[in-house]
Length: 549
Image (cartoon, rainbow, N blue to C red):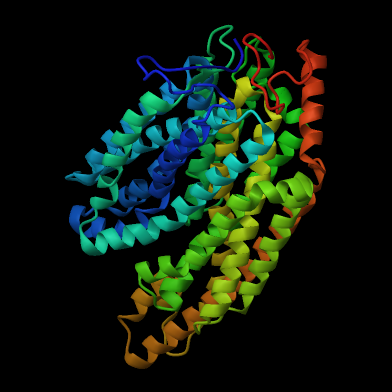
């Protein structure tokens, strides 16, 4: 059966369960987006709670690093596993299990008595997040078979994801200042409990092809490959040497495992992911655009937070509030993305998003060590709108290009690309920033060479070192470090803009109009696999049982 949708057991009579056209499909979208919101929040909400966690649980430096990083690391590595498993056993089933695990792990994390328990709970949160993220997008693909409605739904979905990640530090700052660090996890419990009950009653079950066994070995190999690459790039981003056993080795092993995964999938009769999808220009290009957009901006976002806190001296809550123009602009881009897509088409929309974001990034090079709130707000508005337009167009093209019965695997590829791009971006732009920052501290009047070398590691380290110096040397080091950071930020902004303009060029491989991609994919399906053209693909009609791939 291909891309079938059924209702769950014991559901209330009279509630429509059609995959498309049912009056509840927008309600289903709300349920999916609320659950995605809390998963996205957890990627950033812990950042502002780190000082409180450190004071209460006393973790070592390595333990603290793993407490912060293990959630996105585990989530990224398991997306393909759970996305393709949902295609086989049921996307709703995987989603509900994810809700339950996420809520349980949140309770353990909130009450963790030591760093080891908190680390374990964060790993379980990563597993739950990996169950939830691709399932929300693949169910959305099933519930909205009409491409125009699906574009609206993806716009709302992508806006919610952006809001969750951006609002995380604001909400986390409020909770930590008014309660205790465990409250950043405790808020997940009532919401995930509600989602579990509502989802069981309301969400439709859907699954793809069930022919042949699920490739367990392939799923594990893919998880190991992604884990190795993300672990390696995170180590580079945290300051480890580029060539070393903890960086180069896991990356090399990860690449080898992913190559083995691709080779295995091409040989299987019933693969986890049909590698022929990447031969379709719209699909492969969309995935590349997602990676490049995240690569260019996520690392830059972390540097911008440091600028607001360490250079301008804002508190975590004030920093979060300064980021709100970016959030609102991203929301606007997501909510208007469908109309923009229809007016411009995928090629122009994604290219426009990249160019607008590059222009915003270059405008931000006017930032100095003095606060310029209007410049920052204007730059963040352009950046948020352009970035979200790029991601919207890329996700919509990627998901529409994939057959409905493979929506779980396609969603997992998109989310994995998102996570890989983010990890590589933190490492790459962080390295550029460090290379540009350090030379400005090689010689500071009145400061010993050894002290200057320590200050060259980061701006935060420079402030700590300066606190132990005399008044004149302290002020000289702080000024030198702040000026070097701003200069390094400018260089990093230019590097990010270059990457974004490269992305704009890559996006020119996308189809001019949304219909072109759908029509070509339908023709490919009918020709290559004997399925009737248009079956279940963006036609506004759900595929009949047994049709398609």
